[in-house]
Length: 397
Image 1 (cartoon, rainbow, N blue to C red):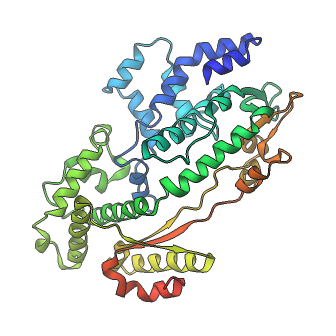
Image 2: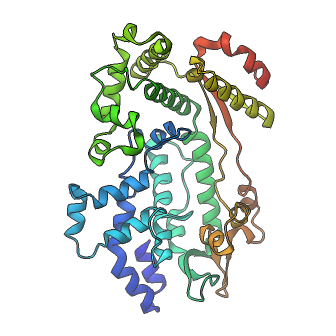
Image 3: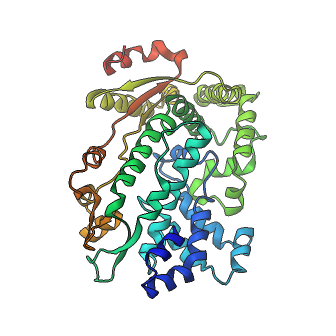
């Protein structure tokens, strides 16, 4: 992307000099923005999304690791005079102070960033799916910085030129299809649902978990917002798998107080199922606003009652927009400059910059502006009798 942009703007020394000067910082941000992910990537953050206390975002952890005095990654970056760690962090995380060059952040974090261009193609190849295929070469060729001009006449943003609308359509369709058929595959999401509920059970049982549970896991479950960097760096997939194995063979369930014993038994059962890769939870699709509302209300009611059944099901709302036009951001309260900053913009043949959503004659873009609704109810099939009533009210059996 950087090489293409330098070539595109070869007659603008200011842009070329800036790209060359900040190139290593931008590349470092692109390579390192996800090093703060916890075990099992995004699914770990979903464990705490409804909790009163939660760990920092994975972007915030990435920045902490890059600045930590004991971090080997930070040691490497400190030896590179061409890398500005503060700039790297501002390109990675929206919780950092905004960079002076927001158009460079578009390369790392935007609807048109290098990460999305990369992971769709990579994941399509690694899963054997062709849904992630799009014309990446042409998309790179049509990149350029355009002057948006809402905040200041020189305010630049990563855009595509008018020749690239077809490539963008293919890219956004690939993203939609990958989320529908790969990232949102019902088996994957059912396993994730059980993993999330297993860890939520462990959070409720932190005072009673077996002593064999790895200390970093115990500490992050007990106090996620206070987790130290040393403990967090120990939280990789292998440590979490070891915790699940310890819980699967936990022989001290009988010593757990009676009021928490059902939860402890559920934790052991779930952990064993995950370790053995047993059949995933059963999945039903929820169609229409009323079934979704009833499913969410059921889970809330079970949680309020402290009913162990709350951990035997999960409402999985996969509603997602493959493309977010600036109008939706404005409706959510963003100012015009903020909304346009988050939009994919097109540079016309005459040099004018406008949002992709207002591109004429693009029926594909117009259809992609609508949210793609997909909501599911996952549950342990061994509790089918207990859930048969609610399932009937959802209209699925």
